Length: 322
Image 1: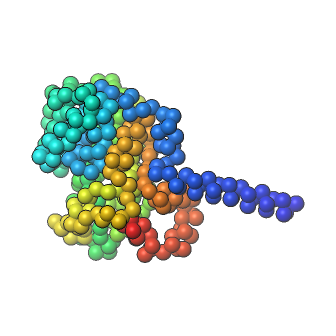
Image 2: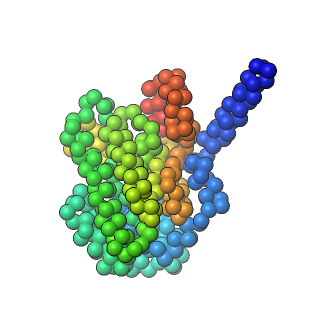
Image 3: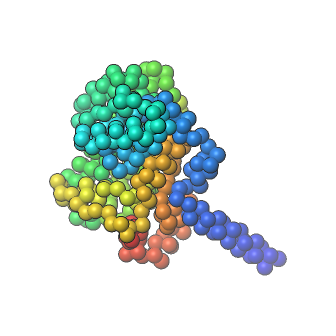
């Protein structure tokens, strides 16, 4: 009898292990994978007004293009107006004639100017008369050893990656409430918002904070959709603008062609699918990122054992896509 129960237990464990490995080979979580096959297409957002912050490059840029292909009206904002204008032209060109110049609104905006967030929002309303979806994509990452980070860096990173996001989202939330709208708030988080990333202590803390803020919002405002999107390592220029441990200093390195990273185009496409399907939480990334996330999120005790086996040096190589 004991042999039988041991056999059943081992078989059950092996079944889940095989299933976990199969899921980990995907480039998204299992929910988003199925939604990409059976869920709402991106075209279901056609005619909606979507505001994307941090849209001048990287994931924000490619998300804008993925939405434009399906006739989604866009407000794209960032500090770099010349790059935004290039993104606008790319969006119109990729829209197959469904978008004109007035359907892609370019807004020069500094997220750190919190006192002007209402003004920025009103400028978008003056143009489109409404905002259906706000995508909080603007932000910066970090590379720094935890013990050497100057507290001013913690404050500066949180100002941009957390407080600016929260403030603009509250402006949008109040607009949704005044107009009895079932609005949609979307946040670009990170896999660092789900498991602790080495040499990115402040950034990891900021992304975890966002999950706490928006989980509370989701519970208080059930009529407002909230999507947390967590990309793993992606081939963008983010390393150049990374915070370090010193105020005012930038990491100023580039992503290498040999790095194992998801393309920004693929990430933008999956992001658009997550928005179209109003997922609560989605993550994307190349192997072994998904495997680590499944272990970290669903088997936290096993995660501690796994980290001891893998070691910090190997984990750091995974973190840097090498």
